Length: 107
Picture 1 (spheres, rainbow, N blue to C red):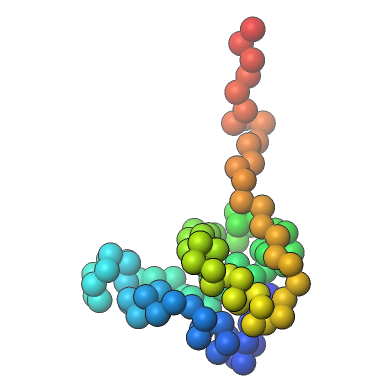
Picture 2 (cartoon, rainbow, N blue to C red):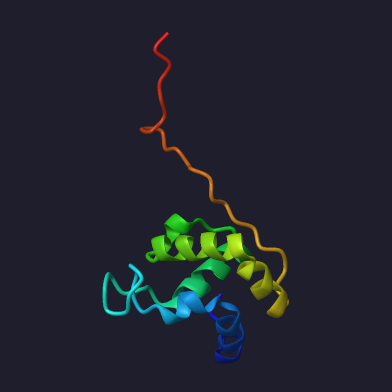
């Protein structure tokens, strides 16, 4: 889902100020790595919730998953869903093991 400018204004207002005000991770302005673009993370989180795709399918998966986790824990995700009148959001966040990652039975 790519948020329109009007939708982004609604979403941005719902994001806790601590996530918008701190320009870099690590707490203080000017220290640490820059935060990923909030709008891009929101687009990815909502796309995943609406389509059922996996975080691993996106190049910004780490920042999107971090935002998803924060927003789910503090209720922001539910407020965004309600404000945008979105259908139910479904996330697959479990670990998916490939065949080479599975443990073999040694018996």
